[in-house]
Length: 374
Picture 1: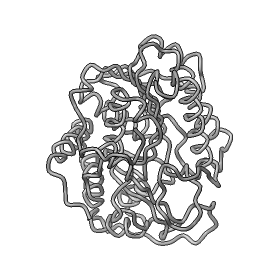
Picture 2: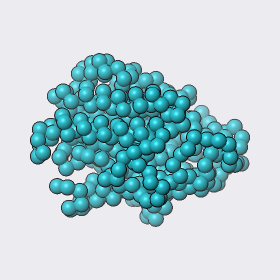
Picture 3: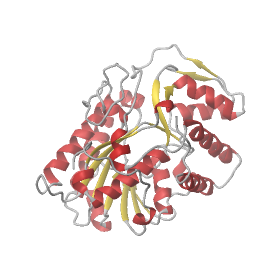
């Protein structure tokens, strides 16, 4: 069945599906990968991680002792033979590919490295996976920046043209094309039968506790609040789709489950973005953080020369809502509050694995009583 023919009932993720499932997650030492690793452990999955060392110091991976309760393997997705060895050793049923160079400004400093990791790395994962007899589903995580932005402020849907004027965005568009080529060439026995489900996920800007990446709004704001220094902001009028990191991660879980159950129907590309009310300019995020931080946090516009960035990004997640049954559950204010609370707990010297797991459980319990989203 093709998208749009028949909406499905709004459903929630099946937690029981993940118990004892053999999962391999690339990029598990990063911010998003660390949250995902802890959630998969909470769900009872047999989890193997494959990644370089944590990209920041401090890191959520180290602070929350993410490696405890999983098999953590250090490796580079550009090392195809090592990746093959790990996959063959563990024979996962589902692979989540999150390993990436994830910063736009870094892509200007190292365009070749960005293309190598994001494009060749994706090809390596799919190449290593395609001969695994155990594999049932593969989810490649890319970005909302994979779309060609025409400057008309319209919300991107999955059938929009891919593109990118900066190396990062272009690399994510290329990763989407690589995924599509592998899906059609190696994971379909014919037009009616799939050997395994292969999908790509495009999420908006994620926030949450434990992100210390440079040149990223929330981490920079947290640092400024902690140090009581004024934050200099490149483009306060840039509009982005903001959401807590757990929102798209839940989408990945729901999509991967359906990839295993019905690979033909659920293979393809999927957007996971917030409600319209949470697609707002940077300055509004900062104003809300000022109210939540309680530290006299201040910011100002930095008029200096900066690499060009897209002024407005919006995502249309209608396909995920109608076909997958996914929908956002936390308002942006709830996401920001959870992020601030996480960092306050960190500054207070609390056990950050316990704090992070408590936020995951709080989010899960909230799924049965969602906010009224605007």
